[in-house]
Every structure is written in C-alpha cells, then in structure tokens.
Length: 604
Image (cartoon, rainbow, N blue to C red; front, top):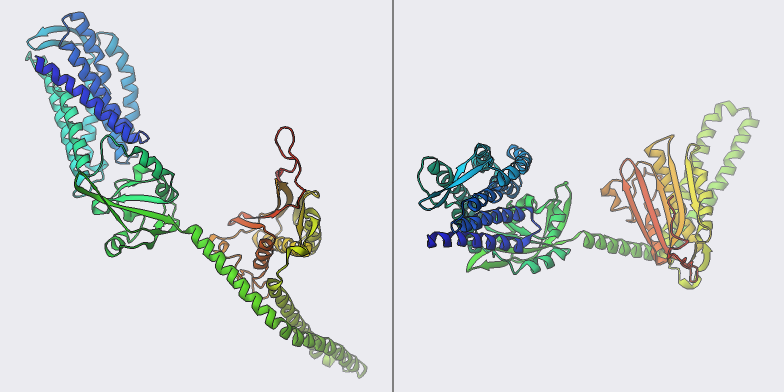
C-alpha cells in the first residue's frame, strides 16, 4: 500500500512539474496553456487518489471521490482542444464539439462534486475504497471518453506531421499514451469494479509518464522543458528582424514575432510547416550557400517582401542536432533608400547636364520661336493678298493648314522651353541665405488661383488655410511645388471620375513643423507606380501632357527646404499628399495651459 501511495504522489508531483515547465517555457501560447491545464487536472486527480488511499472515514472518502471529478472530467475536452490547437486546424469539424463539451462539463461538475449523481457512496475493498456509481456516471464517462476517442479517430487528419524526426516521435508517444490511458482508466475505474474485481487505478500515473516521455523527446530534439531561454525569447521578439529555427525536412521549428508579422500569420499556423511555404527556394539556398543571400518572402496576403537571409547557425541540444537558425532582414526600407539615392544621383546628373546645355538649347530655340512669330505674320500677309486677289476660297484650305502647322511648331518650341526650364530647376541650388519668411497659407492661395484656371466647373474645392503658419523659404519654389500638386490632383480627377470630384487642400501647423495636405478622390495610383513617382522623367500621362519632372522637381525643392513629402494612394479611391516643412523661427505658438497647441491640425 505504501508503494501505491507513493506512486500516486509521484504522479501528482510529476504532473505539476511538467505543467509548470511548459508554462515557464512560453505561457503566451494557447496550446501550452491547454497542455498545462491538462497536466494540472491530472495532478489534482492523482493528489486526491493519494489522499483517498489514506482516508479511514467513508463519508470523507465519498467526498474525495466526488471532488476527483474536477480533475478527470475535463481531461477529454482539454485533450481534444490542445490537439486541434497544436495542429492549427481549428476549422476542422471535430473542433465544433469543443464549446458544447465545455458547456456540458460546466453543467455536470456541480452535480458531480456536490451530490450522489455520479458517485453515490463508497465501500471498502481489498486495496482501498471503491466507489458506488450513480446514474450520472454514464454521461460523465461519455464526456471524458468521447473527446479522446474523437481525437484519436481524427488524429491523422488533424495532425500535419513529417515523415520522420522528433515531431513524428512525439506524436506517436501522445497518440499511444492517450489510447492506453483511456483503456486502462476505463478498465480499472469502471469495468473491473462493476464486475466486483478489485483494481488499482493507474490512469493518472500513465498520463504523467506520457508527459515525461514527451518532455524527454523534446529534450532529445533540442527543446528544454523548463526553459531558461524564456527571457532570450522575449529579447528575440523585440527585434525588428525575423529569426527562424529550421529543423529536419526544412520544417519551421520556431520563429520570433517579427517573422510572423512579415508573413502575416500566427505562431500556431507557422510552426511545424515547411519554411518553403513562405520562402520559395529556401532549401536550395540552404544547401548551396554559407553566406547571406537575397531572397523573397511570400506573405499570406500575397505581398512579396525582399529579405536578406543570413548564413545558417547550427544549433545543438543534448548533444543532438536541433536545426539551423537564420536571421531575415527586411530590405524594403533599404531598397527604398537605394531608390532615393539613385533618384538623387539622377537629379544631380540632370542638373549638371542642364548647366552645360541650357544656354546652347535656349539660344536656337528662342531664335526658332521668333522666326515662327515672323512666319505667322508673313503668312497672314499671304492670306490678305489671296483675299485681295479674289483667290480666298481656293486658297482657304492651304492657308488654314499653314496656320495650324505654324501653331503646332510654336507649341513644340514652347514645350522645349518648358522642359529646359524644368530641367534647369535641378541645377538651381538655392542657399538658405536667399530664404525669406512667408505665409504658407498665402503661397497656397496664389497656387490655387493658378490651378483653378484649368479646373473643370464641376470640381468641388474645399480649402482650410491657416494664414498664421509661416515658413522660411523661396516662395516662388514652394508655390511651384503646390501648383504642381494641385494640377496633378485636378488631372487625376478628370481621368478618375469625370463630372464628379472633390479636392481638399489644408494648411496647418504642429509644433515646429508646417503641414500642407492635398487630397483628391480621383483614380488613385497603383503600388507599382507609387514607388516611382519621384523618379525623373517617369510619367503615366499621355505623350505631350507631362515630362515626368514635376514631382521629381517638387521632391528636390522640398528636400532643399529641409522638408519631407509623402504620398499615399488607394487605387480607385484617391490620393493624399502631405508636405512637411520647418516653421519659421519664433513662429511656434505657445502651448496652452492644458498642454495642447493652438496650431494642432484640425480635421479637413
């Protein structure tokens, strides 16, 4: 009897230790909490069995047996819930039973613990007290056994397993351990007592041993049960770069939060899956390269994220190979910076080019423009002569075509002037010595008057311009930027939703920064175009409608004023542009007594 009592105590202590160890490793995982709850329930059952074998009073023994239900009754549904959660198959039909089972157990437990519904009384046996079952034992047993049987029956369909390795071995231990525990518990706790045969309850001990075998398997394949690395995991989760542990068969063993954010999935949905689900060609890279490699991550939303994958770091645990750790660095910001650097280099090259050729181009083009004006006068004389000679009707078509050709040539020359002037904007490096203090609201008002000339009559314009927002700038350059933004928005409205459109313009201040906001509900900009809008000579407008220099020059001017320009757009819904500039010194409004600023931007 003493040996039996010690076995029960051992099972209780082992279950508590395993449950605490799992929570210590990572209590944030839902699956870990469910497994720990399963082990704690088993520990409660084993602890009451330990007490039962030492209790001489039949009344107390009856209450002990009744309160055991708090330990054994939830085991089945906890087993099912943990299995479904671990497999990331919470949409599986078997998972639909979980909520009703929890509800049924919640209704059953009060009757089991406080009445003779399940345990009517006890009687002495050869090896301790034996329970006398009430009518409620049948539904109580069904609540315990049905989830376990359902989980075992669907094991292959809800568990995604590799062909070999620690995960498969662990799965086998759990499967056969659950099956044997259910069979042993049914035999020793129900069938044999009903037949009048004294039996020793070994279910709690079996469950504890299954947990110990799982812990040993995890330890052999590189995971520590009571994890002193929990703090290190918290540090990994604070990194902006992704960190992954890839095991046998290229299976993702672990990942930090940065990687999970990249791919747009949860840890339960990622761990245990092939890493190639997100990084195509990862296996070939792993086998062929020992240096950082540029690759791409395919996110759940279909986005492609460029990353640089570090050289692998082999990890070993308990003398065995665990897997390889990789650092994945998001290259989107780096690529964006590279594009900006390339754009700046292009601007500088264009500026240098403009300095050397602008005069050479302007002189012959200006001469051509003057000659065209003279030709237009001469052609008008030809028309007059034809009219005096009575040949007006016969020459009308030729004269009209001549005027059209002259106008088209003049328009082309004017366009050359415009291009040269815009290109020359890159070479005009304005020093801050030439800056003057001006009202941003007044500059925007002047730009609005210019842009409204080309605005369609159906355009609805909403302007909120704070005249007290002052900046140090070259007013003509900032006006040029604002005019360009407004014209782009008006043209987007014409191509997006003809006859319907809203244009919102606002000027406000926040702290030491002046803000200009231009928003339209036009056709918007697609992501592939949005990345290139500041590139020189890039345009989506038809030939003759744009040079592709407007936004590039605007970006160049704003950066020259120590400002920033940001563009966001949703295709089919519109585009929003925000320009941020430093306010003039001494222009910052003092904070009010409540800590707010009177210049805080108001909704537009």
